[in-house]
Length: 286
Length: 238
Image (tube, rainbow over all chains, first blue to last red; front, side, top):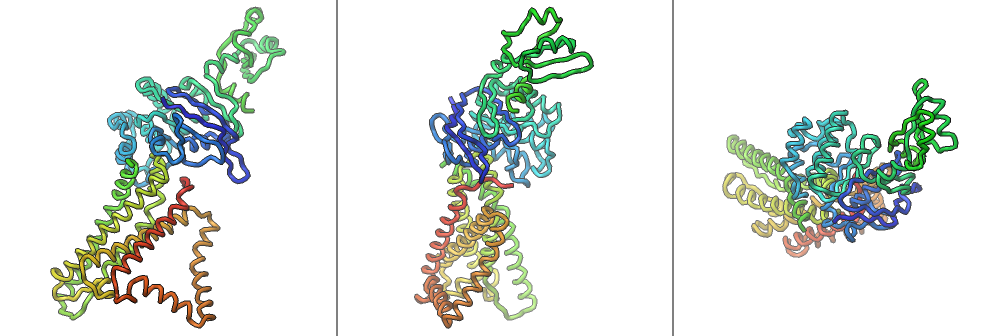
């Protein structure tokens, strides 16, 4: 059990309130998506959970123990940051060796295997890695760390579509074999949607929502068909997104899935579909 | 405790190559002097090679923080763990180099350059060639130099651009003010400083090398403690 409790946490930088009295309980062995617009406070929150920075007020506990300067608790967390904290002149393979020193459960063979599969040359120095490969290297270290809690901040930054797909598949496979608490902070909401079980949405430093993705998606649906008929259907309903191509229209309606008017849709020859997390996210954070 | 050991291991790993190269250069220099003097048959003496160790350790202190601290953060080591581990590693490297210098002193005095008088700094200052006393004094000086280097780098790390400029000019300003005050006081400040240093370094007590060593070790401990203040809230910087 590795439960993270964030209790009334605020973080102030000068005049800016990066986080404002955030209360979240993150249960163990689930995959969370930490979502928010630029500057919403996602990275600040992850930095606070890992004692990289200190809260202005509030506290963060893991299984009831504070994370503040607590090596025992911090040793159970691996945090893949967007910022490079590794020595620029060190070779990737040496960093794997040192990571094993600090994370005794680090799976060296798995790290080597992943490096091969992703085409990462472990003899390269960190400074010589491209943006994409720097992300791959950090993601591999995180995947192989075998820590109880793994935090990813923009894990697919600079990765091409193939590598992004490989990463998400590996993340799920890794999680299935060794369940752990995973938090992924990203802007690529549609990509991460199939991976995450629960979404945490932060807006301007405040927690606005923490709910399972399934539950969240059941609160909206897509209705599509001929534009004029879609317009007729959505009249009086709250719409959070409309896409049109020629005479075809697709609208995301903010209404519980089980409240949709199937009879009207049938009459208008419209089709229903699952809402996209991104559309909901935009609606919630605007 | 476990993390402290790992920090020590990493910091020492970071040092050892540089230490090895440093001593290879020192041995090369000592050999070159020996050969040159032997060939030319000149009647000269040389000494004070351990001052190079002090400069090396000061530079090592300057470089012991930024990159390593970030790496420790990447591995979720607490600042407390990093501080203790780094302090132990710096003391260990200082002790090792003091020991090597003490052994080199014996070698240079008795084996390599028996025809060239070699005088260590300890011998020049205190007239004491005891192995243990020399080791202890060098250890004190080495620790002081490495801790001072660490302190300087910590200070710059925590300062913003304006404060960095202020900190850089502060010693110059302090020196100018000191000289002005000393002139007003008719040399009293100079005499007080010299008196303090003479006592602290043990020259006032029959050139007691142990008092000098103790003062240097105490000074190092004070600097190391001061380093803890800016480290407590330090965050990773680019």
